[in-house]
Length: 493
Image (tube, rainbow, N blue to C red; front, side, top):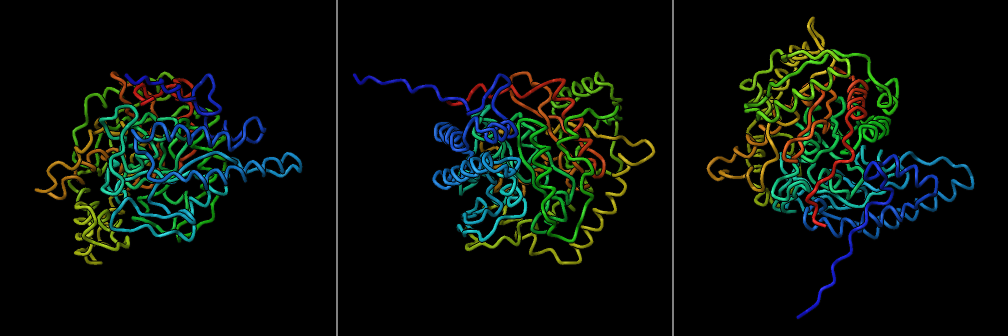
């Protein structure tokens, strides 16, 4: 009989304290004060990734050697700063990872597709460059679905990514790898992007904070999908999200569109309570969808907690929001979102994306332009939910109308109907896509614990350019009803 030695318990991330796993801001402070080294912090996360990620598949690439070199350079800079007083960037030496849809200088990018290859990128995307300049150490790339088009993180290229809360369920998408990594304590924060809810949905399913900032606040290579899509992070706290958005918003503008930069740093807004607000409770999907009673009960509980904090909560509707009108117009816009992605083998593109690319090629320019104009004209009516005579400061919704789907569920029946996976993804995004359409700031927070343990978030959508109001309200809720201590019970340790 062969004797086996039990594996020693995996250590907690460096910097873990009484409140739980460390935040990015806490780690940056420890590194700057030389209480820990960037290399020590990085090695702790790499150890956890090596032990836990085989069960999750949150990473499609981990750059052990390059990350250790970058952490060593960060430690050398910390030592110089101690001797000379040189200022350090705000997230100096803190590990993070970039979603595998966005260019990182010197690293291959495959967009989770067998059809793309792995071309090495010549430069960082603008938001990635801002994160690098903020001091983050990049340790690899997190998984996404092919071209980021659906609400689960499953692809032929990288396989299935699983939720650390329930290995039989998806962490959501398309920033599912990022969410799974942060929820499992494999990173303090992770980069993500959001074209219809792809930061907020996985944040909701994984018990995290995820914010889609205002249209144009975070620079990008182009006005992608008419400004539906933007970038941000997944984190465990509102303050981390706010402080990192300050860094992203300060990056040089690269497109025609400018937005007002926050007059007060978002980090400061997150540190102080908002004035009493008028909050509209909305359970009104933008796509055809049935809202699960558990999601309705959760958002009603959130409304009670907001009332307890002195805010006025009223039942509310968004005028002009009609799923039957919106869905075909969204489909025209969405099909073109990845149609220009260069591929080396069109036949290797996954079936849904082949369908979308074919639909984009059939769309003439007049149809496309008319669709964009119609969406803008209808949006003017929808803004009245915030700006009208009976408008509110913030709209409150469930983040998702349904619980996280099981592995493979999105793709069932696609041979008979190639559009079916998109319809299921649209159902999941039916409460988040409004923020993308209108370009409004929207955040998902894990305010209320679900019976049975599976996370499901609530969403706060602010008025135009009211990122600070949204973050201030979310942080007030976090202080009153902390969630940072929660962690998945089923981690494969």
